[in-house]
Structures are given as structure tokens and as C-alpha cells.
Length: 303
Image 1 (cartoon, one colour):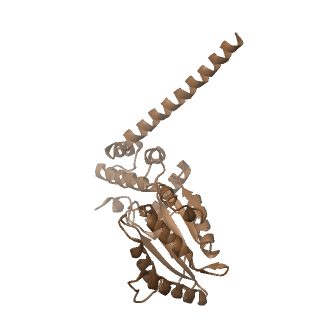
Image 2: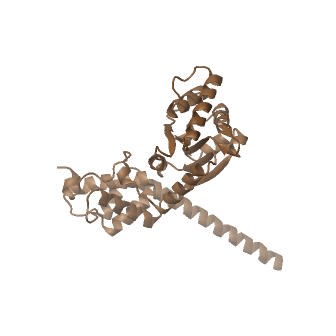
Image 3: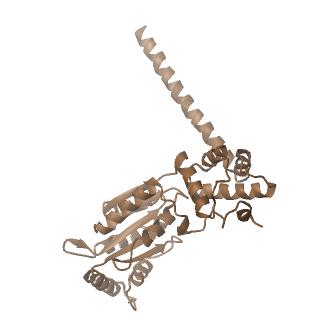
């Protein structure tokens, strides 16, 4: 028997594998999705969503794809798995994803094929949308220029292709390699870690989706999960999964704060929190010293 059955759950609630049924519509994720959908529906051309590791960018990209029904959109999701891709690969892959049959090996002829396909999609009363996940992998100016060229596929008063980048914060630096492209960002949103309240709601949500009636986490354990995860959903999942397993192995009835702390230490997260606290203390001390220096200087002037 695994810990799911032990806690009367239908399945494990904190897997980091993508699963739409566990999607948590936090306030900021909802705001982000609304803005990205607005960009697409208004044919703005280019939208960008950035966020730190584990903040839910890929989850949001998949959620957006699910919100693009085929009767209104011709959409695709491309995941950049490494930085060695070429502009030709990008053009070919996007063309195939949007329905170009037998893509030509010559880039200029392929671009013509894509343009004709985009016109066909527009004639059908639909919109062409390409979502690019892990877009920080697009690290060359040539790649950025390729995307700028794709955004130039338009008819009078209307863009034929909408592109949405999802990536780590360094994506912004990559885009600056092609300033004209960076200036074309119509909508931009930054995902941040969850607040303490949102983290606890997130945990309750996943427990409920997994079939749980009551949370097996003690109140102070929930607070500890947020503390050690920093509000990052991926780390929340990892801590909670390990804490439930540890509680099951001990045959305890409830996940305690001490178990969460032990798990965090094993994962190397407790040391990170301690270091962050030390750094904050140093900053605060420095500010106090600066303030004292300013006071002493003022007293010297008065004397």
C-alpha cells in the first residue's frame, strides 16, 4: 500500500508530471492567461510570459493551448529542448504544425507556402497561434530575426500569425539581440512565486483533486512548506510528496512541521532558507549602518 491509500486519496496529489486536472487557477495565473488570450484574440502579434524555474510556465502554456478550440484557432505548442536549433528548423516545424503539407526545403519557397496557409486559415475565420515553451533556449540573433520575419506575415490591418513566448527571465536578454523584435512585444507578464495564502490554497486544491476530504497537513506544516519552497509550485510538490511519504513510513496520522523540516533538510532547501535569512540580515544591518553614518555626518555639520 502506498501513501495515497494510507491517507484515503485516490491518487498521489503532488506529482510534478504535467496533469491538467491539477491545474490551480491562482489569481496571477488567471491574470496572465487573460492577458495572453487578449493578445491572441486582438491579433497583437507577440506576447511574452516569463517566470522563474518551477513557477508554472509550462502548465500555463498547456492551459492556454486547451483554451484555443480548433473551430476558432489553428494552434500549436513547440518546446525548445536545446539551443542548437536553426532558423530553418523553426520555420519548417512551425509550418508543419500549422498545416503546411510537404514543406519545401528552400526557405523562401517554404515561407511562401506558410503565407498561403495563413491566408487560408484567415479565410476560414480562424486565427493562427504558435506557443513557444522554454523560449530562453532561443539564444541567437538569427533565431530572433526569424521570428521577427514570421511576424511580418500580415495583410493590411491584420497580422496573420500570433506568437507567445514562455520562458525564464533570461529570455528578455535574448530578445534584446534583435531590438526590433523586442519592441514588438505587445503583451508581457511575469509569473512570481505564490504567496503564503496562495501556497496553502494550492496544497488544499491538489489534495481535493486527488480525492481527499481533509488535508493531512497540520497548519504549521503548511506554513513550513511555503517557507521552504519559497512559494514555487514545483518545490511545493516535491516537499509535500516527500512529507506524505515520510509520514506514511512513520505511520503517523498527520504531516507535522518537524517532518516538513526534515524533508526540507534532506532536499537541501533548509540550508537555502537559512542563507537567505542571513543575507537579509546583512542587508538590514548595512542599511542601519548607512543610516547611522548619515546621522553622524549631520551631527558633525551641526557642530
